Image 1 (cartoon, rainbow, N blue to C red):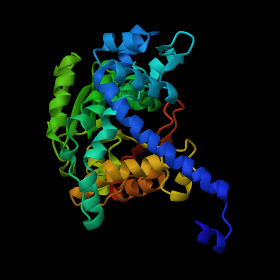
Image 2: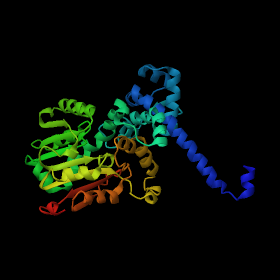
Image 3: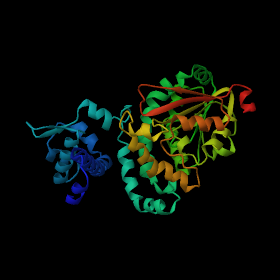
Image 4: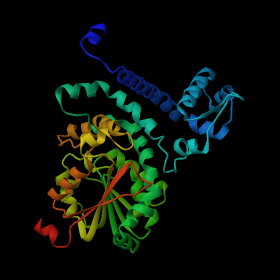
Amino acid sequence: MTAVLEQETLDMAAAHTLVMQMLKDGQATMLGVLSAVGDRLGLFESLATHGPIGSEAFATRSGIDARYAREWLSAMACQGYITYDERDDAFRMTPEQRLCLVDAHSPLYLSGGFAIWPVYWNNLDELTEVFRNGGGIPQDRFGDDWRCGFERFSTPGYSNFLGSTWIPAMPEVAARLAAGGSAADVGCGNGQALIALAHTFPSASLDGFDLYAPAITDARSNARNAGVESRINFTQQDIVNGLPRQYDLITMLDVVHDLPDPVLALAALRGALKPGGRLFVMEFNFSSELAENVQHPMGLGAFGYAASVNYCLTTALAVGGVGTGTCMGERVFREYAAAAGFTHVRRHDFPASPLNLFFEVWSEEGESDRA
């Protein structure tokens, strides 16, 4: 350190700021482990039900060891996930904390992420290897925890906004679906988006497509549990070969950036739209430009690139894909859509959904033939 100081003048305030950021990142990593434990054991739900409560009583109610309970509660209180009352030595959850951590129907519920983050550590050795040699980590390496965690992470957006806000922003499409039109969800995952559409548009004909067999199995089970099994058809299929029929609406929700060949897939879907039909695309709210993500308005630029490396990019590269990555952004998406033959891309902004970008995509009748 002395040698460095002799060679140049350092901004020690900047260095200390960086050190604190590194410590906070380490804190977040370790807290992620504790949050995952709490998620697996239902500890947030237990506290929401029984609080305010002391740590020993909480341990008894939750069926866990008292010493671990005290340490877990203390960590969560320091992070602001729960609330500690020093006067009573008791812990509780505020309505706002319950909204984000416990209420699975809330649009602010993000606890599904607690099941996702530990999976990335499980892949550390494989990720190190593909950094050295290229290639990627196949989707099936991420397992049930990742798949079910992402379902919990994404479902509140679909159930709260897809049928009530996002699709009504395209009035003609909404009218078609209400009158018994057809919709397909490509990359449907566990089927929750189509289940939301089935509840909003009870006369619509709905199909879901995904290449991953476990997701299709889950989707069928979820539709059955939601009472809409007879109204949604789920198929394991690679959509680059086209879809079995044409649709008034095709949705792609956090899918395009994951595709091995986005242009080829988009071109196939263009041919699967009825005249006047629309492709509705949701993507994460990142820019195509690194400089803009460095200054991300929510401070989440690093989150985008980290999510990309840990899942989106590596799963695409594992199958020889182009490797678009999570931070595809609006510019790159518009380039993909144009290359696929679409002639119109309209961006929609929904204030209640700031983490995402939304695009309505189409070609006027005859334009797609000339593209």
